[in-house]
Amino acid sequence: MSKLSLFFKLFLLLSCQYTLVAKSKLDLDLKSDIIYRLKQIKTSNLSKVSTIQKAFKLGLMEYLPIGENLKVLFFPTKREDVLSGKFSKLDIRFRKGSLQGIEKLEIKKARIVIDKISFDVEKLLSSGKLEIKKMESVKFNLRIDEGSINKYLESERRRLRLSHPRVHLSKNKIIFSAKVKTAFFSSRIKTEGKFVVNKEKQTVDFKTRRVSINSIKIPGFLTSNLTSKINPVLRLSKFSLMDLIPMKLDEIKIHQGWIEFKGL
Image: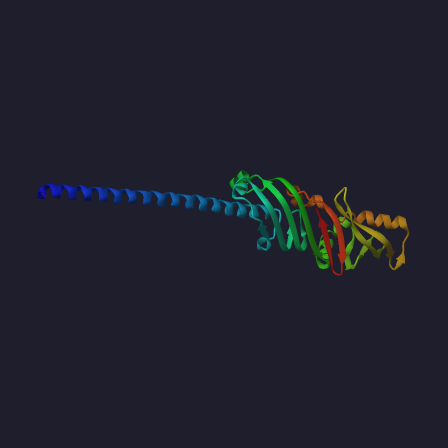
């Protein structure tokens, strides 16, 4: 075999080897690029899910002016559902806050649990406005302390047309006292009763058991006149949150020094 022929064979062999190596490197680069792009897409979607969750929490804070005390637990939900404006379940909690529309009444702590909620995700991301379309169920629990109720009553004394209104909470019982002023005299009234839920009107009313003025028990028609001034103690329609999340007050429990509101 001539030296020239041997040279050509070696040249062809090396050329083929280079081509194979080059092709293999190209395939690896392409595969790496695909993997990188897939990771970017996944990261982008995860980032968008996080953005939606943050926007949802900020949207809630419009109705719950409580700053950093708000905690929202987002239960596991498929990514595509979140991107279309859905959460499987939410657990909303806050402490020492208030509700828009009745900021004067401090809530010691609250919890709202919502199942299968859908909302306008485009509106939320574009304007920051939270608009709920649908939810399967909602339960809530609010705790309010005696001191907070007394501060609220004092702020509402002109509406109630009573001076120094105060409540004392004990188990299953409320003692309410205030001063009544007329053109001729000023009297101290004291009444014992409880808060009841008017489920139809969604109000909290005070139902009296007995009323006394200056320690003298008064007849029924005067009792009715007094309660008509006090009631309703609270209207749930004042809560803007009720427009966002339709909740119905179902039960009130009175404890020593605090009161509990439950609903669904």
